[in-house]
Structure formats: C-alpha cells, structure tokens
Length: 342
Ligand code: SAM
Ligand code: SF4
Image (cartoon, rainbow, N blue to C red; front, side, top):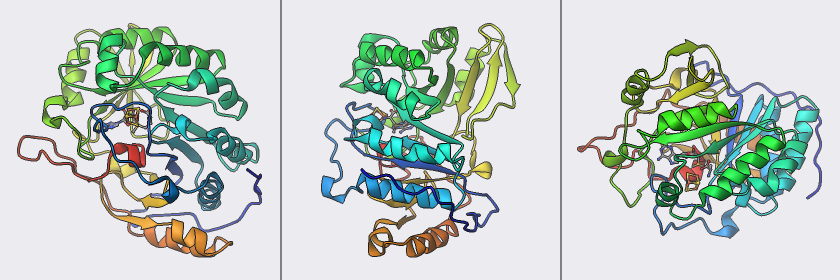
C-alpha cells in the first residue's frame, strides 16, 4: 500500500445542528470476527460480501478526509479489527498523521485474540492505548459467551500488549446472571495490573439468538452492589468517550460506566462512525446513514466526498433512545454492533 500525503487541508470544522464539534471517528474495518459473542452476533452470521468492502487505501483516504475536517481521534474497530487482512498497513499509514500532529490519538478496540502477534507493531506505529473486550476471567464461561474464543490466547495477548508498553482498558459488558458476581474480582485483577476497566450496558442492536431481556443488567444496579464492596469517588477523568469514571479507594484504579440505556450520554457526543463499506452513521442508535463509497469512488479529489459528509453531519440527531423490556424486545436498530463497532 502506498503512503499518502500529510498535506494539511484547511476545511471548515464539522459542527452538527446541536453545536457539537465532530472530532472523533470510529472506523469498523471489517464486520467479520473470530468470536461469536452471544450478545453481539448470532452463531451463523451473514457477513457483508467481500467485494463490497472498501480497500485499505480507500479507508485511508476516508480517514484522512475526516482528519482534514477536524477529526483528532480515530478508533479502529469491527468486527475484530485485527482479523482484517493487512490491517497493519492501514495503521502504519495512518500513523503519519500522528507524526504530523494532525491526529492526537490512533487506537483500537479488540477482542485481544491477535494481540500476541501484533502488539509490538502496534506500539511501533504510535498506538499508545487500546481497549480489550473481556467479559469474564473464567475459561469455561469465556467459551460460553464468545462461543469460539480461547481465554488463554487473550490473556497472552494482554501480556504481550503490556510488554510492548501499550496501556490497556478492559471493557466488559455487564450481563445479568453471567458476570455480575465476578466483576469485583475482575476489577481487582485489572487494577492490580495497572489497567482501567469499563462496564457497558448491553444494547439492543441486531437480531441475536438469545433474549436480550434475560441479559440486560442496568449499571445503576451493578454500581449499587459494587458500592457495598468498594469506596467509589467520582472523578472528572475523560478519554473522549462516553464513560463516566470513579476511582476505587481499595484498588486505586479507575472504573468507567457506559450507560447508553439508563442515562443518555448524547449531549456531549463528538463522534461519527464509518463501516467497512463506507457507510457513515451519525448515531450508534439510529438508522439514518450516508453512503460515502460512491462519492469516494466518483472523483479522485475529495470535494464531492467532503460535501456529502457536510450534508450528513447536518442530519446528526440529538440522541438515541434504547429500550429493553418485555414489551420492547426488538432491536432498536437492525444492524449488529459488529457493523459499526460500538
Ligand atoms: N471485536 C472487538 C471487540 O470485541 O472488542 C471490537 C468490536 S465489538 C462490536 C466492540 C465492543 O462492543 C465490545 O466491547 C463488545 O463487548 C461491545 N458490544 C457488542 N455488542 C454489544 C451490545 N449489543 N451491547 C453492548 N455492547 C456490545
Ligand atoms: Fe466479535 Fe467483538 Fe462482537 Fe465479540 S463483541 S463477536 S469479539 S465483534
């Protein structure tokens, strides 16, 4: 893959109709994955045809256009970003924007399965922090929840990432009757290794094989039970994401809560998402989208693409409204989390 220019293009920053500046882009580089987490996918998922995917060069061009338009942070996600073929080429190429100080952070969210192989190279590309999704430390439960995953492989990946100097945040989806009782031990483990941890509420995205009502655990409830074991103090720590953090006196570590269900965090939303086929989603919880693949391919310069992005940002909605209960037991949006990467 060839290197592209870092030439600074001055364009108007992206401001949505509610005055929010868009500075954070999440890129789902593939919808495929080597796991089948029960809350994320059904076991027999239909993936997008490979010929519909943007090439790595096209993804680079899209990311660069967003950087030209004021994006300062890019997170690669998926599906599993590290199973996309030659993904390191894209990461290496995007790292030129870090060197040119046009980008503050290049990061990724991963299930950790490929970290043992890639950790060193990621660090060499200027990646400083990564999120690793891990819902349990019990090998049998890990197999149950991921269907195809191997806990030891992920733990080796975490070791390798720490050895490479990457800071890690552990993300766990809170699942009723599955990992709620284990969270205190996971917190002690994560904090003992110098890793932050964030808990996420399960969101109604895409059809899965299970009933989400059975899995959904409001974090307000989990927080109340954690407060019986830990002394939690709210802290103003921010990573540019929607988590609200506390510090635990007993471990000294940070715990974040991402509460899309019980609290809308949309007021401060600074992000948009693109899929591996070049669809721009202005909100994780809404269906409205804009196709960027056609304008990207229609012209070698970025004017048309930029105009389509501007028009889409003007449609960014105020927020989402997820509901999970017995009467509303349908996905709020039809696409799976693996399409837009959370
Ligand atoms: N495969 C990578 C991973 O698991 O980290 C990146 C993509 S995954 C879709 C991103 C995050 O979304 C993971 O932390 C995962 O646990 C979370 N996730 C997936 N489906 C979800 C859902 N329905 N509700 C809440 N979080 C979900
Ligand atoms: Fe794959 Fe991540 Fe979804 Fe699990 S949560 S199936 S690892 S994309």
